[in-house]
Amino acid sequence: MRYIEPHGHMVSRTTDDYQAMVTAGCAAVCEPAFWAGFDRSSVDGFRDYFRQLTEYEPARAAKFLLPHFCWLCINPKEAEDLSLAADVLAMIPEFLEKPNVLGIGEIGLNRNTRNELKVLEQHVDLAVKHDQLILVHTPHLEDKLKGTRLIVDLLLSHKGVKPGRVIIDHVEEHTINHVLDQGFWAGITLYPDSKSSPPRAVDMLETSAHERIWLNSACDWGVSDPLAVPKAAFEMRRRGHTAEFVDQVLYQNPIRFLSQCAKFRLGEESVG
Ligand SMILES: [Zn+2]
Image (cartoon, rainbow, N blue to C red):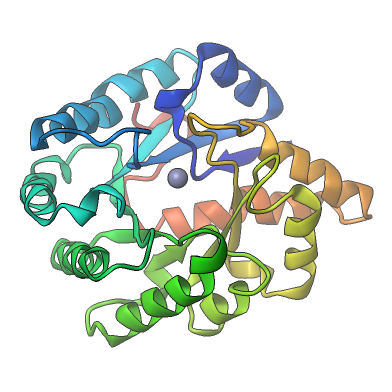
């Protein structure tokens, strides 16, 4: 089989993980900027992180023949500090022309605070101004439904946003259709013991518009599984879905969304 890992935090992973992913059929990995498990103390911490995402990590992935792409932002958790957020937002354009940068993400909300909303809007302005794709993180547990509604409302009220160029990630059963019905793409994040399991993800694929859904593993620094996407393929096949269906959801769907950025290329032409 072949698949794309459209949302994997590879800076947290070992080379064994790269090897396992390529062996399982991974054809490209895309890495959104996120909270590193600790708050960075200054804008220079982000500059180093963006250099890691645009220079070092693509080179490390290339050793395993894997094209590596990334997204840039200050995540909602650290965006609570408005002055740090302003400094990071002002720096992002320096990196937008790098060959592996696909867009702005993962932006969004964490605790649905006023400051988070303000910085989310500033990121959306930045993305529209520079004609970038957008990848959105939605909050967890009890904050998810309210946060998803706030995000969708903010995006729909912005004149420059085209829903087909935005993916809203970490959807669950109670948020997926709200996202898809407004024309956005939806991402389902597979985790061993939170967010969605492979069986729940396949349930959602069977009951929602699967043409605009991608599956990802996140594979961050916490409990997570870099092979969660191919494991979901097994769950699809076990239920009787065809190999063509698996290929469409896990390979063709992410390519269709990501190819809206001309820099997204696989194989010989790829960067990194
Ligand atoms: Zn993430």
